[in-house]
Image (cartoon, rainbow, N blue to C red; front, top):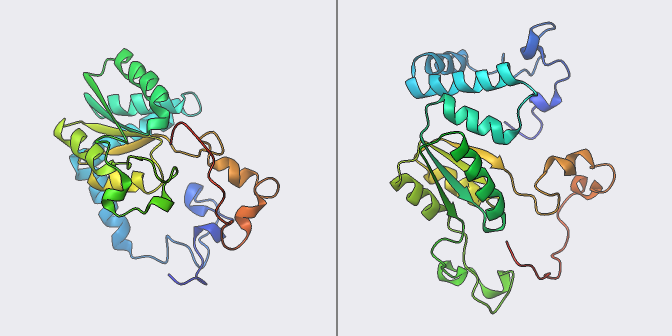
Length: 228
C-alpha cells in the first residue's frame, strides 16, 4: 500500500458491520484476495486453539457488552479458554496494580499466577550498548527493561495466558514476540495520561493539538522520578 492509497480510515459507510449500504471502491473487503477470508474462516472453524479463543472473545463481547470492566473481561476470557496458569508481564511502576490484579485472579479460582517485573535481572542498560546520556538518570546504575527474560520465565512456567500490565512501547512488542502463550493486555502504558492513551486523540484539537503537527517536540530536560 502506498501513502496515497485509501483504507478503512477513509471510509464513512462501514458496510462491513451491518451490510446495510455498499462497499466503497477502495474497500478492504473487495480489494483483497478472497483467500484471505477463506483461510481465516478455516482457522476460526477448525484450528482448536483459535476456535476456543475466538468463541471466548465472542461470548465476552456478546453476553457482557458494556457490563464488565477490562479486569473482569480478562479474567473471564482466561476462564473461557480453560487457562489455569496466568502469567503477568508487568512494569515496575505498575507493581501495585499487578498485586491487585493477581488477587482478583486468585479470587476467580485460577490455579497459579506468576508475575515477572520488567527489571528482572538487574542488568545495567550500558551492557547492551545504551549510552549513559540516554539513561533517565545518567551516571547511575539503571536496569534495563528485560521483556525477553520476562517471556522466557513465563514460558518455563508453562503459562496458559500471559497478560501485559504497562510494559513500555516496544518492550511490549518484544515480549509478545517471545511469549509462547497467547498474550492480552490489561493496561497500556501512558505516563502522561494516567494510562489512557486514547485521551490524546480525544483532546487533539485542544490540549494535545501538537500530535497533529509534523515531527516531534524537542527532547526535554530530565525530571526526577521514582519509577519507570
